[in-house]
Length: 306
Ligand code: PAF
Image 1 (cartoon, rainbow, N blue to C red):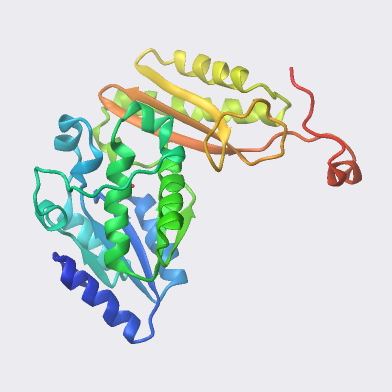
Image 2: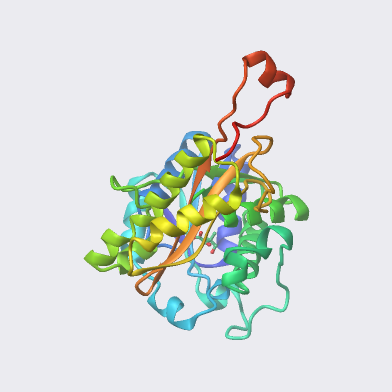
């Protein structure tokens, strides 16, 4: 496995692979790798000839300097993990390699409007601009490839898809399912910062999503009622402070007027667990009632709400 630190060497390595006829699977990360990242690398390896991992804690996407300082950095372990999974090349640049004028941010930044406007975008101003800018730079260095992102950061995935489509990168963005611990907690590099009590309390995010999923699957059609249900489950853990919990359109993350089963939906949640901000999300299907023929004709919709 090659480990490179400069933009030029990374570009050259990937051009070399492609010149030999290999397809490239790109896995952008901020390091502190866990089984969730491994699942991205494993999928990339199954679908591409060479896997390229990037490890860069991107300061541009952290509004809070304290959050950036506390972000775990475990490069030696990360490289071992990558090597054990057969990764071809790791790109681990310094901050000034990516942003030569740092601490002055780059003058050119990428901003995605609709998909980044709400939820994490509203709670963390500048976050998605930082994400879109670094991912655009990584895509422009990497060139033709497939890029693998976790669905755990569901809004990030929507932002990256939109950015790649609008800017015409020759890159297929692939979303991969969230990996969870046995108690439902979504794997995240941030979990390492939770105390034992916080770690236990953090499972309320998954419990709230599951409760909401079951309610919608059983006929709840009112988005506000789903929000209230999520809030009531989280309120059962006094150490967890809910930022938002909602059911949204899975493509543009807007809140539908009614859950009518016509568009794919997603449950999303964000909360502070002690000092750590956690996010999660889950697929949700609206209960449809009617005969198969009625459903196919669109004459009936979702089951009536409570
Ligand atoms: O999801 C992450 O780890 C980061 O946001 C990403 C996509 C690598 C950009 O820094």
